[in-house]
Image 1 (cartoon, rainbow, N blue to C red):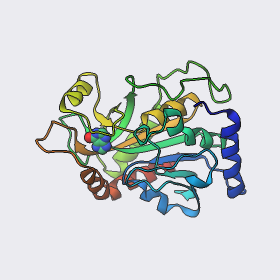
Image 2 (image 1 turned 60 degrees about the vertical axis):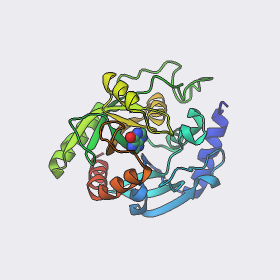
Image 3 (image 1 turned 180 degrees about the vertical axis):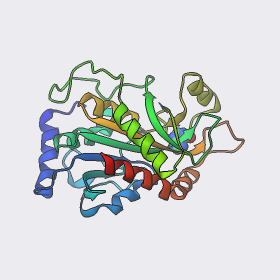
Length: 274
Ligand code: HPA
């Protein structure tokens, strides 16, 4: 279905009524097992997705399904603890609905985090990756359907979906913290099955360094409505077929827990410099 501007406005208005004078600037979407950053927000105002008109629930494991507004590293943030995925049965437009609502609420920057499979065989599970670009060409666009000019143009440029200035900021920040940071391309696969080894080889041939089931739709939408984007990936496991072992959700959540300090340290330090 196509959402109307009125629906986005109604969602934003409902949230505004809960926020009072608080105005968020930086939106954050936290991936599998990475939602704990939302618990570190100061003076939090938490709103369950189910209490916001037109919002969908988040059903994926490790995703709480609420928005937390407050202050982190001195910045006014809106943290999505849990995202909506296409594989949960949502259209791409539904899955990225919240991004536009956060834009209407005044957010001009989006930080996206995720856990993903490592496609690049030079790297290892547990590494962090700065997303430089994405490939999402085998599935439809979240912008399909009537264009809403209040958000952006019909044919938006996608040359710099991941803002060069923020990439540089992340690079410098990682260096200062002594956290090794890979850089690469996020290859979107819609899941929910993990990829086959042949799909992972195809992703590698096409220029992917990581494979994952999220992020890319929201980033298309964020780019369309003029938000600056920083994307950080936890390479939670080697992608299918690289190691002779099956992939599991538990492996992803364990990796997220193990990387907690490093990952949240980097995200928070980047945020503090924005
Ligand atoms: N593939 C897709 N999504 C993922 C993976 C993976 O290997 N690991 C974590 N999310």
